[in-house]
Image 1 (tube, one colour):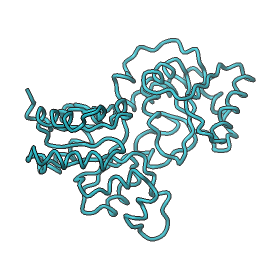
Image 2 (cartoon, rainbow, N blue to C red):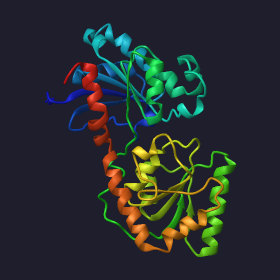
Image 3 (cartoon, helix red, strand yellow):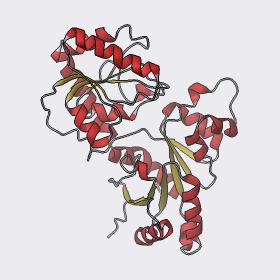
Length: 325
């Protein structure tokens, strides 16, 4: 039985996003049906889900935007009320504002800069959720009169559980990211490993681990290193701090000050790595400092569970689209 106080949302989830979801989960305000868009007969799969849940909102998750829109359009010929159901999309790390200079850019010029924004330009969307906080105003202007609102990233407590009891952490410093043939990332790993070898700190580098595998790695690690490509706010900041692991990254931008407090809940190193050893030392030789960062980061991360993101950011926007108070 459906809860009349909740907004019924059907989420069409691109397969690779099944473990991410980008807020797409049930919460106090939202009753969500997830459809993983894979298999040989997607029209029948989608039709069954629509008839079962009678959605008030359809969310498209991932990159197959046109295909999923077209499926919905075709299905609307048989399920006529579906024509009136608003569609929602969430832009991931667009990082547009820091790549645009001079006069206000056009929708077309922004679409050439970022594929997530290009997907959001589809006129069949009624609401766009924007992960990069500093891009909200820019995207609002570009997509007007479409509704555009901020929606930070979050994490799944079924994978990254902030209530897990703390355990012995045998790894002092971990680098758990892909190198991507990027010499800057390789330089960070090599430099950190060299420092740890000289100082007697345990070090581990593992590439290509996500979700449960990543959670297991960071839960056994005192401090995780990160490298950002464009000062974007990484999803791993949320996933790492929620498990009490200290997160150390190059400087972040994109409105990070509105989400986490540098120096209190996460740490940064200089892009040239000149202070990397000093920052590592400030944590690894000072258990009290590590405990403070660990506790503060975990407490802040509790605000960004997927359910919290859905209730605080998504549900109010959905109500606005639906004309509810």
